[in-house]
Image 1 (cartoon, rainbow, N blue to C red):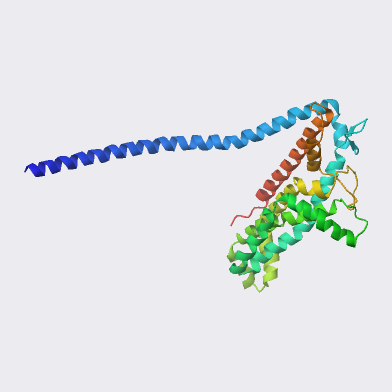
Image 2: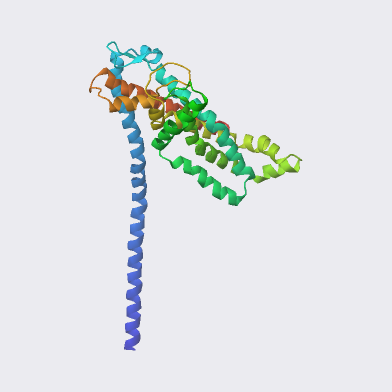
Length: 318
């Protein structure tokens, strides 16, 4: 009898301990449930606060520049001579170089990227896709300074052997190499957009007697149009913000020209030049750095907003 009483007493104690442990565990879980959203909010706020901080820095410093240089002269001037005795700060040569190099890049990357995406999505077997896609994406992992030296030491001499009029530093070769750099972005994002098109649409098209190529062109690409266009806009945005390739291979000539054989300077290359130079703090040259950076910020922000608009506007719901 004594043994049974002790056993019952031990069981009651164990149950009480389990209940206490469960209450304690439940209390900790409730506390974590309340704490985790707060931690996540603070972490998410860091990115927003960082963006606000960057924007505040650019605007507050650029204001000093625009107090000395009229904003109209800055955005309409075709002469950029920051180190001259009579300095001029027209940004059009930099805008011109940035837009031309980005156009060359997209002309190279667009056709190759979209064709690669079509092959990977519609024609390649699963085994081939698993091998080729990672190999293609390796291009995105190469440091941009390596691309810059590749443009300067290989692509430019190759172009000059065919086209001797091309200068040693020009906007053509960095534009081509930037195109190679953004091919993975267009190919990968476009391939994802095409792969997400339901197979039922392909099968329905093929059942109507069309060929695979016709199905790809008339069904798959229109259905994935928003994703494809978004990949193009994001790739252009990436090319606009590229720095090292144009700094190394395009030189620092602030020419306002449309001649691809000549040296030009982009906004990013100008920022590198001024940042690494001997511009005295508080000088107009120093503040011009922030004015150009603010223009570049607005430029890339517009491209990103355009990508989101296109993605929403032409999005297909299946």
